[in-house]
Length: 318
Ligand code: CP
Image (tube, rainbow, N blue to C red; front, side):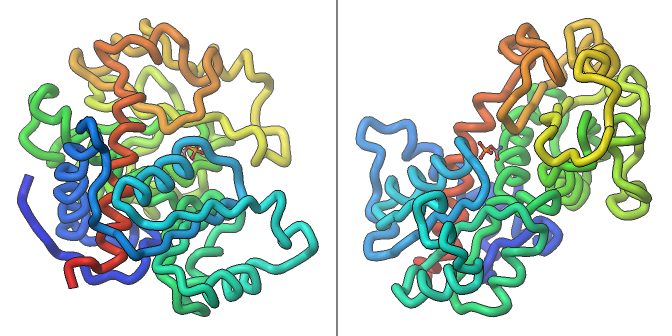
């Protein structure tokens, strides 16, 4: 991996904004923070005096916890705002909420929201640095960065020197997945071949042109010889219409089991952003098979990536 220190951005809104050099810069910074997370004393003074606010309008386990830990391990003051017990419940708008938080002069506000484009709107209308922790079905850039770091760690084991030529199959509910979009953009920027694999009802229109991916409507064809099989969560909470006959039938056609995984490259890694629907998009046997599954490595790398992103956006390098 090339070493690079390029980073001039105030916000992190999406992978579509990032150049290859900027992605490499974040991955390099995260690799150095990973060492901090393995120490007995997991704390450095890097962000002392900085303030980070987590504002999550949607549920989260991994992203919110890792942003909180990332800030705390670098000695920032971190506030987790509970939307459920805030004045949002009295009808306060998103922009009013942010404007009031901004009046307290935070350095970074990490926002997750159900509306695509919410963070871009905030970044245009407010002064605080904004990190997109997921906006609707649009983007989830720190998930894509942690996935790139995880794949990068396994490139040599899979027989590759770089992302150039690597084949990544992103499988399942692509339509509702901000993870699929951010990963497709990031992986393409890094030179990988990206496949979207899923039923026509869960595939966005004209996706090949929009993302430069190949689309497959049979799981067996889509994961054949893939180096990376990235399974997506079936997002039933975002489905307003009838997208599937049944969850059972979805598993029959699209669930990743060992028989299907055998079609991928012999050293293929299996990824999932979480939370997993075990027995729906992935079997427990595959999810827990550490000869292929890197799902918990993704979580560990998420912490390092969020440390790197906070470090870059706080501008501590001057
Ligand atoms: N992958 C991910 O965003 O997980 P959470 O929803 O738990 O943050």
